[in-house]
Length: 261
Image (tube, rainbow, N blue to C red; front, side, top):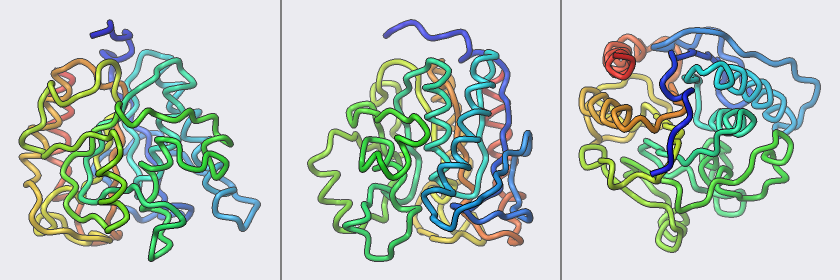
């Protein structure tokens, strides 16, 4: 395994992005709070707006990584990961991806039945239609072979078809270990809907049958033990005001404290 940069052992830098796509959510309850990133939009085009927001996220992440800190980006969706990975790349870290999610997030504009852009981020990260946003924020595609999708159990038929032919690896939360991981630095993405929906109130797209919050925290600690985690994304994919952060926060804080210790 290649040697890892010193920034991976530095203190965590919490960056809060209170948005669901381009919708500002000042009342979003988050389990971790820190430096806030917001954006001023001048366009009505959603891709223009996301490019502005994720460009700002990339700047914040690159700044933290360049100071030998580990960025932990907390937001209201998964698409913020585009800015996080772009920020790592700006700081010189070419990272693979470990993506915890109950969903696949590998839809395209051509295959999605709902048109929901929050179903596309992992597909965008591996190179789908870079003109939409990646080229605007300087994001280079992550090779499929450098991606592990963990805990996905609610997949649409086009996603199933894509994953059958893609080089993206699959794993379950409890079974994830070092042998399933790509070599080198990693971006760890945690959509908290990967947890059984019975434990997370107010989820936008709840999926039953997943791991408990304590199981997720244990898997996160094991990943930190590898020394490969360069940045973390925490997607609080719930609606504000349901108390989800209070339920999940202690488990997440314990996992990050274990990593720091």
